Structure formats: structure tokens, C-alpha cells
Image (tube, rainbow, N blue to C red; front, side, top):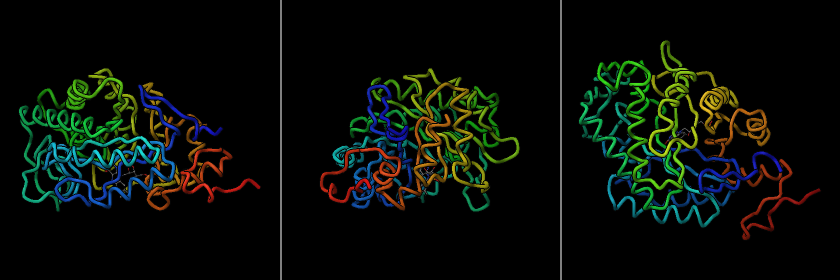
Length: 344
Ligand SMILES: Cc1cc2nc3c(=O)[nH]c(=O)nc-3n(C[C@H](O)[C@H](O)[C@H](O)COP(=O)(O)O)c2cc1C
């Protein structure tokens, strides 16, 4: 059995393999509820053999969405609408996570006041956010908490807190976007306080048997910005908060409008450092397209799980083909049995 198809257990969650579909916004959810598109899109990846599907960035508040068409979890109706989506993912053999997000200064929603650690715009085309007061921070922590409760009611197996890609929690974590002088700014520990309080609040409503992941930007590609060691230090400071952190989904970039050099596995070195310095399981990747690259990421100790984003958009059946390529016998959907590649 390859490492990629070796099952794993995180808390009470059993995953049939190490393949993770990372959250990917579909910008197709007016009113924050899933559309027909979402059912087709996520169910197809479940049919294709992905072990864990993390549903796209989902706003914890209307002004916390990236766009007007993000999924949302700020109403009970949105939670009820997600029940059927989770059920479809489960019925097709995958586990379901959801990424909870507040976009902060990167929100492009129309008509809302946007918020951030300080009143500085992302770029010259972006609106200038309002600097959050302590009460705003406390309110947003509660919004994450209520969204987590609703995610549980919708049946999700995993919550992933979005603290990457320059959205609100990343804005707090970074010295480049957090110039606050109160308890939420300054030292690395202070900048991680918002994340710690979010973990605490979610831990009080999210069942202890279900895992909580955090997605981080482990390198900001800008002078003076966070590097993997900095993130590891911040994660170490908060990893016991609430129910703790069960896995770190390691990404990079997005804080500043800067495009890094990319190549297959470009975020794996970051994942490895976070794994070694925090002792937490990590999900790593970045431009992974072949079964051999995914297997090597695990075999070389860079990651415990591998995410494939764009490759799963191109090919939802990638896991079924990867198993054949790695010589593993895995269950196929019975409807597709006759298409299973035959051994030569
Ligand atoms: C269409 C699209 C939407 C994305 N939306 C999100 C998102 O909602 N949350 C997130 O953390 N990352 C998002 N990402 C980043 C992916 O999760 C992933 O980290 C990135 O694509 C790199 O992995 P890959 O090279 O395997 O595609 C998105 C990427 C794409 C292509």
C-alpha cells in the first residue's frame, strides 16, 4: 500500500487516504447558499476518490466574504442549505470539511464597511478598511463561533479556520499588516491572540471528537513578513487553545500583491518546517499534479496529507487513477466498476 492510500485517523475522523481537496472559492453562491453547481462540483470529487473535501472559504459574516457570491454561515438558513451538500459528499465516500473565513481588508463585497487590524488598503484598487476596535474583534470571534456551531449542525466533519492568504486572521498574524499597539498587535504572541481566541470560542461549541484545522500563509514573500519559523512560533503559542489544532494546512502568499516563483511542491518546504517545529500533522502541496509527487511528499516526511487544488479541478477522478498508478487496490464506485483499469 502506498503512503498516499494509507488511511488515517484524526480524533474520531477516519480518512480513507491522504488526498485533500483544499478549499477553492467557486464564487457561485448568491445569498451565501450552495447552488446546483456546488452539488455537482463537490459530489464529483467525492466520487473521484478524494478522502477529505474542504468546502471553499465560507464567510462568517456578510462583510467577511471575499465576494458577493461566497458561501456563508451567518444564518441558520445557510446552515440548513448545507446539510444536503454534506450528505452528498458523505454518500459518495468522502469526508467533508468547511473553511471558515473573514476576508478583512480583502473583502470585495458591495455596500459594506470593511474591517482590518489597521486602516490600510490592500492595494490602490481596494477600499480602505476601518481599524477594528476591541469590541469589533470580540464580535468577530463570536461570528466564527456561531458559524462553527452551524457547520456542526450542517454535519461537517472538520472545520478549517482560514488564517492564510491575507484575509483577516492573516492580517492580524503578520507584522506587515498589523501595526496595532494594543493586546492584538506588536509581539508575535499578541498578533496571534485573535487566532487563539477564535480557537477557544470554536472549541466551546465544536464537538471534541471532531478535528479543527488552521490554514496558514507560512511565507508572505515580502521583506519583513512572516516566514515558516515565525508561523511555527505563533502556532505553538495557540495550539493548546480550545480543543487545540489537529492539523495545519500550509499555504503561502496572498498577504501582499506579490506573485512568488512556483514549481511542483513549492509549498512543501514550508509544510516540513511547520511540521517539525510544531509537532502537528500538516497538509502540504502546491502545484502537485502526479501520483509520484504526492507519494514523495509523504515518503520524504514533508507532509502527512497532500492537497491538490487545480489538479482536482482539471481531473476530479485523479485519486482513482493515482491508486492504479501506485499499484493500490481501492474501492471504486460500483457504478464505475467496469471502467477500473485492469492489471496487465
Ligand atoms: C479557483 C481557486 C479558488 C481558491 N479558493 C481558495 C479558498 O477559498 N481558500 C483557500 O484557502 N485557498 C483557496 N485557493 C487556493 C487553493 O486552496 C490551493 O492552495 C492553491 O490552488 C495551490 O494548490 P494547487 O497548486 O494544488 O492548486 C483557491 C485556488 C483556486 C485555484
